[in-house]
Length: 263
Image 1 (cartoon, one colour):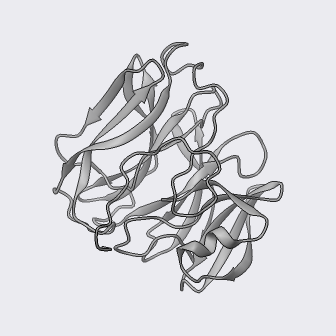
Image 2 (cartoon, one colour):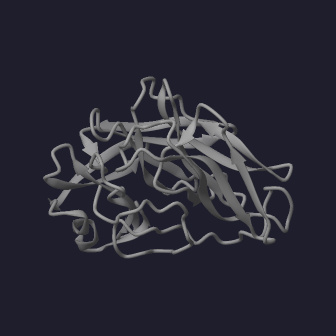
Image 3 (cartoon, helix red, strand yellow):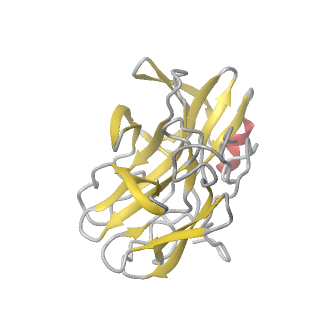
């Protein structure tokens, strides 16, 4: 862990940040409307709370994870949820994105189980309370983690996809899923890509707008090249975008700007 480094526990609203490893979120068109519990209620920010040492993995530089999730609503209220045992939030920060197209964002998180490792989960508002809407399967083994890349309409079909790297230090598999009702359904996957160095407090790369399309920027498995990945009719296309020379490399790709930088 870098001296003095601390993990960021909340995601502020910053559209189109221009550097990787700086939080960025989508500028959502109408967060004051939608079906998240009433016309005046929508999630506008989220943060992890309740630090705990009960899951001492250390992938993010220390053995402190979080048992709680708190959100602030557009009417000024805050809501929260807390796990008293078992599952923790093993993540750098929550991410906000409108996954169902109702104009109000959901919260994307990483949850880890003491025996089964990590899974991607989506939380929303229901009956004026936080509610887990959908989740992937757990990876299936203790101390196996996943690192989110970001969320965007990756193929231009009007639906938002979520990208993450499953086991970024071991298997290094990029996976794309999409919210369908109360499920996260697989869309595509590709091996040999990563976005996190074991022990770093931040995730690298992210979702970038390159020209007219959305591109996932990650590193190759050996951390020598930057790879751009696009979703095209259910398949992933990859392009070598140059040498990897540190986290700042992602902000130097000509014609690309961050839409949702990892952090």
